[in-house]
Image 1 (cartoon, rainbow, N blue to C red):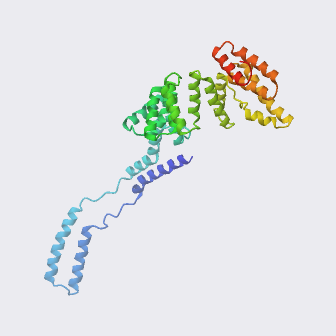
Image 2: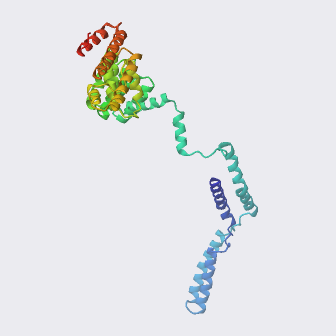
Image 3: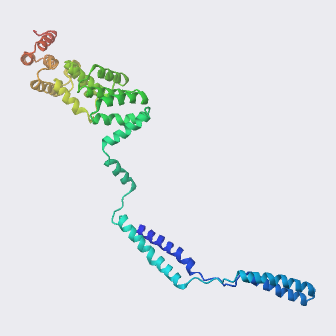
Length: 367
């Protein structure tokens, strides 16, 4: 409504500008004529002669000169100005009042959008951006970086997008430029290592592992780098090392850490436990508690460990911890039963069986 009101005011102002000069009255034709001035001068000469201010000869000479000028002025003003035609004025007024609005409406209806709702400028900018394909946006950023290769902020924007698009080799190059132009830190090194692993089909190569190790050296709490170091250990067959890395991460992680499910799933894959380990210190401390507290603490830990080992019996270290827990609690029968279950679980793997027997001998049981 406000917009249409402004349009109406603008139209009225345009019409007023056209009608204003047409409505002004014409100036009198005799007003300001040169001949009138000369007539006044002749009358003044007569007054001066009657008053004795000039002589008759001087008056005659002045009359001749002024009369000559009067005749010349009268000839120049012979073509009398005619007032504008009244009919023409009326035609122009009608055109201004009716023609201009009609022409404006006739142009607006086919070219404008009278039924289009309000569309803020911010929404227009967002719509244009959203309508563009991601590939086009990436191409624009890449074209910008070709002209400005030292734009570290541009490389930071481009690198993660390249990873999402599956252009891992280009992402590796982008992350290298991020480090070069934005500075070296643990997050940048971890991102570079992740891109390298993705380019290798998910395998943590020696080059990628080196980047993760550099990240941990810069920040020992760098989550992404620690996870991939555990994954590297798993891929190399060092599952115990991988489990130790991931268990340490869970131990220091907040309860609401968004990456906890990923670490717990990885631990389950290698036969590790997301629950705290049964350490000798915790078991020894439990022996000094009263019977109720000690039983509640130890039994809960032992049951969780035993339940996990029944589902995945490849964890030799877990079996040794379970056996040691029963021995500390004085339940040697249960310890021997756990030993038998452990040998049955790893009996088909000579390496794990050897590791189990060596651990049992250290516990004072037959290997």
